[in-house]
Length: 275
Length: 275
DNA sequence: TGCTGTGAAACAGTTCACAGCG
DNA sequence: CGCTGTGAACTGTTTCACAGCA
Image (cartoon, rainbow over all chains, first blue to last red; front, side, top):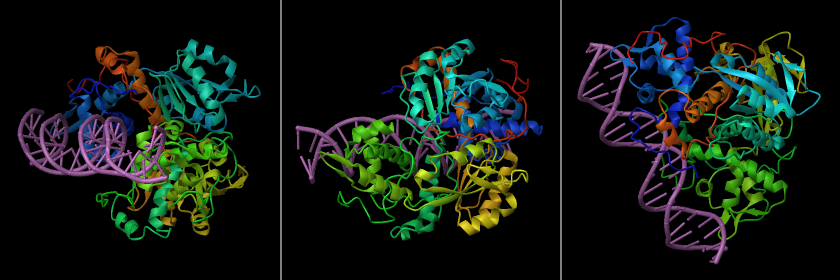
């Protein structure tokens, strides 16, 4: 499903690789910092360092946007800030709603980096009637009943879901039905959406699990994987950088609460299948 | 830097692709749900749907772990839960510290999915003396002065940074010096760490920017990109799913507070470089 | 001369499609 | 016969290395 993507030679015009799009915000952040320090130009090398990538990658990324640099000199900071902002669609502002005002929802509502990038929190929505009217981040929480009206009245197209996992799919469907076409999902569930709707997920527990995986390797804890682990060390075990995060707010860790069906510390397998 | 990676033929043994590692937690989540419903076996097709990936990918992913399925039948749920947990290192438990107990730090501290996956919050640390001793998620916040002692005494190797961007690098250095080798960074800054230390970042504002990019395409808002946008629509514009999130807690949106140096709504460029 | 922009090569990840086991 | 496991083809991304412009 969702095949296609015209796959044009990608030489300028539309067709910026997804990997590049994901890095543009990083460049923008670094450029904004330079801009505030009134630095007029940067080389690909300097900017790459500031953004935490390598310079060849950065130059290739920028080449998809057009030729915005000057050979022998570098890139004009202000100009690039503008171009990237425009490419990302940050020259217009985006009203967003946050659904699920628990700990996480509140944290998001208070997040400063929001407004500074063209995003405006249009409303905070929660299903708990007791929350209704309570001010969070200087804004009264509204009840879920108002969801459709809020979306419509404010022309909201981006929704943030920070509800417990159990409520996420339902909230998602209401958002989509009301006109939202981009969703940032913090609930640890797979959301199913119709074509044309983007979902990005952020799952804290997934991030930690990935770290644990690498951590385990380093220590060479387990029985096997000694030489292998050592060989691996030479390079590449560090600076992963990628991400994914979530964190349902209140409770409902996806399904089932307490201890997972984890087996004993070792070989103590369910005694079913072979090895 | 960090080149290498032995690049063994990857046929079993060590050498699970990073992309596969990133999906294991997803499979684990889906399997745990099945396990709780006492489902004994699943086919790659069913599990793939539950995890939101396609079945070929899932089968290939599992093939890196070994041959844990039964042809004509599928996979034993309990057995797979165990194998994946072990592979991810979740059969041991990992003490973690959270540094920066603002809105976000508190949300993380309260996050249920933490404990249910072998992660144990060993301590909450904040630089604000006024926070010291205050209970958050049933645990007293400790002052930054105690950081090194806490890490050492608890054998912590995973740290979560949820401080404002300005403090992140310094906190990171102290964590690393004290023995932490894996860091989950919520502050919108690039952390520099020595080799052997893993950093994963989670940046909310980046996620939103990526959504905005796609959102902009859909609407075909801007002048150009009309036909292109339409062509694009056919497929692929949906269900991105990848991620990255952050959200500094308190304030300090990375650098500088208020309005970004965004230019006028259109062509109103800094009047520097050419087009 | 110094740094960008970009083909071409190398690598990583995904999808196809089917052999082969239970 | 059904479903796994996997080679092989393909698509996407990164890195290299250098031509060419300011």
